[in-house]
Image 1 (cartoon, rainbow, N blue to C red):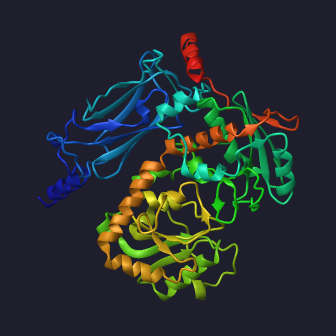
Image 2 (cartoon, rainbow, N blue to C red; image 1 turned 90 degrees about the horizontal axis):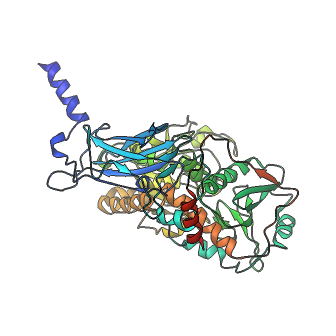
Image 3 (cartoon, one colour; image 1 turned 180 degrees about the horizontal axis):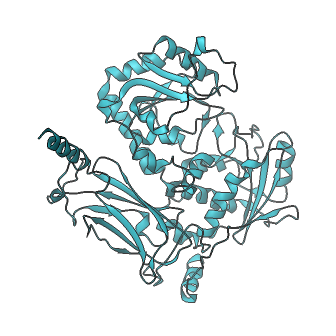
Length: 502
């Protein structure tokens, strides 16, 4: 009898909601995976279970409550990696990466073998009477208006508007020479030209390996959307470069600062997580949402940090942890910049899974060499983020407000313990801040948002350029990967697309 009781208890944990509570018709399914022209490296959708009274179910339904499959309406099988992520609150993220697929697509979302919501979804663009849907490797770009409309991209972004204010006109006849003279040979930069949706580049500097983090998004974008002809320079280092207030040059970087005037793109870290999702990376904005650790009330109420010694304040935090282990759990995983002193800073520890961070209720976001690129992933998890005051920022920081999206910390971290104690005593307000931050990140830092931001910046950057975009003899073409996928759009479709572009 005791054995049967344990079996019943385990089944309850796996399937805490009876399947009869889930309504197949009331359950909601939405997202860009269901829109024909919303081409991204990985297509995704959202599922939220509703009961027969049309109320949202907020209990954990188990990992296998919903099944997502895709197939070609004519050919049948589609080679794809499909995954459904359980967010443990009655909602799910379904995603799939197709390989060399170009053709008709049907998306199926089922519960216990039955279709839910309006499944099956046959992706079709009624204006052009076409049902071709393409995987990431397929080179079949859409007109920009059509692609941005499908992904519901905003026309611009606050950070882009601020960054481009000093650059009403970019003179192509002079800007390349001036940038090379100002920033090389002490820094590494790459000069890119996009002409007829083909990518060309020339790099300057001794360390140019990070060019791969600009090649990859450019190639992926030009396979999906028709970009205007334009030129730009990307700074391959972490630190922003343009310090001139009177005559700033239009150089693009992955990180900005209060004392510089670089034009900011989403970091190579979050962009690469979009490109390699369901591929070479395991940490992305969706995987975090499915691995946020124990429920809020079960998390450890300590300030938590793990990271290398890339800034003095990180060492200071580790020292505070040694003296105040009841409030702070902070440790250095790797010593590179500073001398190792385990008496002062505690023993160095092995890195842990990022998902294990969320066993703790309070996440301490401390700068590294520049802004800590983990910040988006901390925000999207079910934990309260404490953010160090900093001169550095990513493309979305200026949308956030202290005490609304995070708890601010002084730059020298002298108030860390005070703020952690505040959070412990003000549970309701702390939870409110955490929820606002999570909602912001889940709404504004999705894969589509990262691609939309790139496209908006490139479009506005191109609009300001005066002169003819040229492919220099010293540039090399950045080739698209080989693929067996063929663009199958009909002549009629292409004709309608050209009309829309005009």
